[in-house]
Length: 118
Image 1 (cartoon, helix red, strand yellow):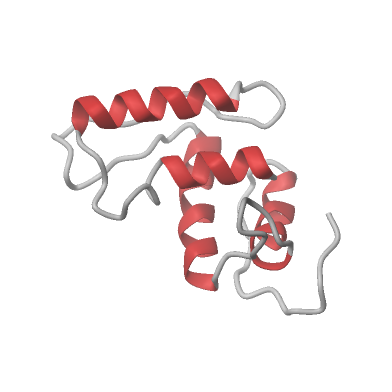
Image 2 (spheres, rainbow, N blue to C red):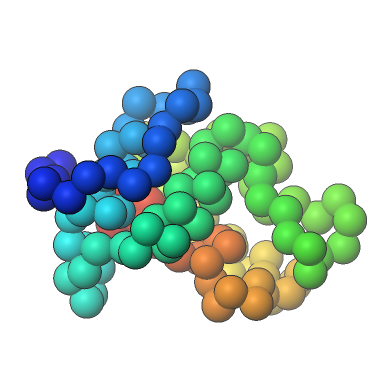
């Protein structure tokens, strides 16, 4: 991806997939999505945190869900091997069953969408 001269706001120090650090640059510096805008530093940080959890296989927990409820636990989500459209549908069904996050999609749906856009 091509980036602007805007300095990176977040650091990457994880042993995750090589594309993760590039995705962070994409979120902050490359206009994307229907609005053709970049993510704010706060939104990029939120998306990046959730994508790292998905890629690690740790899965995503939420204080509004019952104890032990974890989305995508023990599944290492990748750009190469994961059907992100199917994962997005799965996340919608998961939220319908366990409850939607109060952040209006920033927990599961937006991070998966951003992976698709990247």
